[in-house]
Image (cartoon, rainbow, N blue to C red; front, side, top):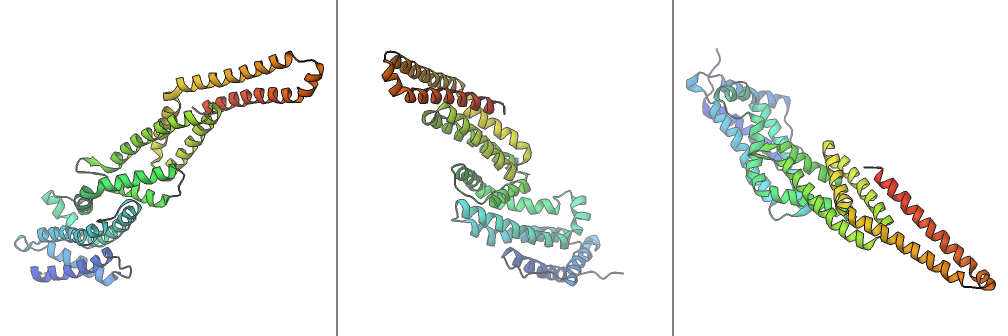
Length: 324
């Protein structure tokens, strides 16, 4: 018959596990649990949980598991995020989340017997969800807005031609996926919705600027370039199911929303070329034979240029619109 473990002795042994696991949270990579330690801590939790009802300390163990997580977040994670912004904030988030998961993994292994009995019979949250809920309640509730805005700012930096750490951005989006749906908020979907709205506003401004600055032909080439760049970004750090939605937004803002302006711009440019060509013909039509020979090479060059540009413009339009 097994000997009952006094509460003080059982909790004292568990405190050894918690103290060592917290070193992982503090970023001490040399922290390792041996097989002997794993067996020792798991056995302690198991022996404590199977005591008679009068000596059942499962509730205390469950609460200690949760409080150990909260203590690490309060003492290590939160202070490390305060006064950080943009890339620095995201880098620290990724680091803290990685350390936190490593620490929680070991604690969950030691306390896992609670999921076989206590959480099921008492109808309380399973250990894995406790891990995520603690981080969500203490970190995301306070910093999520800053995480989201910093990630979107990083995407804008790349759109403006700057080099960014794409792996960092992917890790941040994976963090949103890991947190999932908590406290009536799906963090990844919330980020994605805001990012897509921001994308629409970004390309709306870009379209207005480019229409004024570029010819019709150059504008269509710019649209093609933007679509290719967004497709590459989506493949690297967005869920593959969202690529089509992202490209539809870019296409809508740069093409469909500005269809009338683009059509007017194309007609105006074609009319200008035609008018210039007719003026040249009229000019040379009034010259004598010697003057025609003197200016002949200039006329031929202009005609070739005018016809060539119209042909390139038509080919460009056909190539761009064949993608939609």
